[in-house]
Amino acid sequence: MSSEPGSLVPARPKDAAVSEHASEDEGLKIRLEKKIRLKVDLRLCTIGGLLCSLNLLDSGIISSASVTSMLKDLGLNQGNRYSVSILIFTAASVCFQLPATLAVRILGPRIFFAIITFGFGLITLCTAFIRSWKQMIVMRVLLGIFMSGIYPGLALLISSWYRREELQLRFAFVQCGEVIVFATGGIVNFGLNNLDGRGGLKGWQWMFVVQGLMACVIGIATYWWIVDFPENAQQRYHFLDEGETKMAVARIQQDRGDVVPTPFSWPEVLKHFLDLKVYGFAATFFLLNLVSTALSYFLPIILKNGMGFSTNKAILLSAPPYYYTVIPVLISSRVGDKYRLRGPVISFNSLCLITGFGMLGFSNQVTVRYIGTYLATGAYISNWAALNSYQASNITGQWKRAVTAAAVTACNGLGGVAGSFIVRQNEAPRYFTAIWVSMGSHILVMGIILAFSAYFFVANRRQSKGKKIIERTEGFRYTY
Image (cartoon, rainbow, N blue to C red; front, side, top):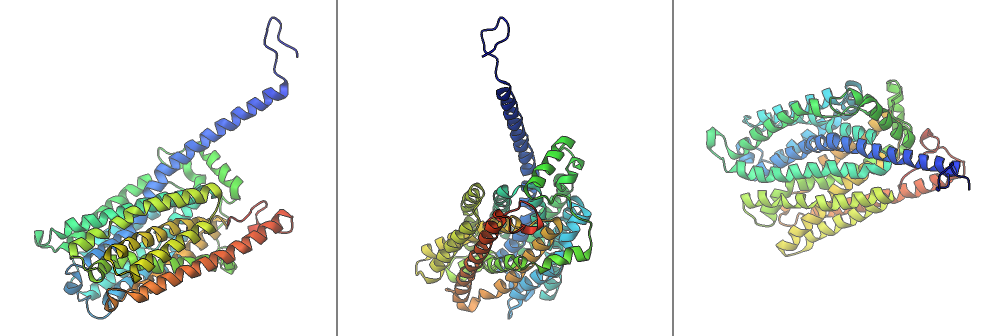
């Protein structure tokens, strides 16, 4: 082996030097990608968790207030008025979801999320001063309109920033922030209820005032904190520089080739409704939110009327199951991303939910029934992250992402409409309608996922043999 004159160290072959140089470049690239991901996590996942928490913030206030004097004060205790107030919120949200999601792309995340979040907070604040159930219905319609773009808009933004094998854990981060805020809101509501009579306001009014003001502050902070879509990232204050932006765009382009949207047109948007996958994804979210609404809006009522706890204990005990959800959502999401498994994770969570509702509905012991709420809550929260990554991993194109995000969130809302009626107070303490519907819904979820996974498996085999191009994108393969 040759060496430099006067050197005792043999010269490295040229191919070894090239290989080492390439290895160094690869290592530098990996470090830069980690740095970019961390920056995005700190900016997007934090504010995303806060924004998503607004929907649960609303259900937290309403559910906590429902075991105070609010129902009687506003005349919501007659007939199905309370359920109607939940339904009308969801119906208004569903109607505006597609245009709201498209607006995120057209207006940009900063303006869009800041406006709707501040508006949500202002309406929540004003709800403290209404005097009748009719006024409550009006406020609920307005709240639904302002909330319509938060979930689908964030799903679109998050899926635009991460590679497919990174998605579920990021949705989990957002979901953890959401449920922690929601659970803490239950404890805050307990404290605010003890202010009953202070300042001429009742306890439930204090809940709306304080948390409405908090949402307004979040809306103002959103304007400066939230990130834009990857191709415009360098325009955000103290975020990515031009070089980091190019790398962020390149890694997403390499994964699925859809960073930059095609020019907007209604035919370009509406054609994606011809893809049957959109309806399958939407159906799973409908079935998921049957359970979500039943638990998030009615858990304090179940604890009070179904298990015999006092008003304050019912408010307090509704919080721990949501703190617990952080554990299963992070574990299941880490497994899903590491092994690129979506269907098996969703099915496992569904089985946990069925078990939890079985404990809640068929046990005679209050402790066992309460533990069942932990299993059920942890399972449906975990499946929110899993199902979002499942649908986002199996489509390409910015407008198709917007359409799918709007469709699944709309059906999520329709599930909420149905879920608002399955917990029937005259069925206390067992609530068998809610039990059977919730268990049956997740048997159907597993069936849909099985059908999808079989289709994706066959399509991938055809793609590997050169017989099929998936999602009109060369080299794209389904994740199941």
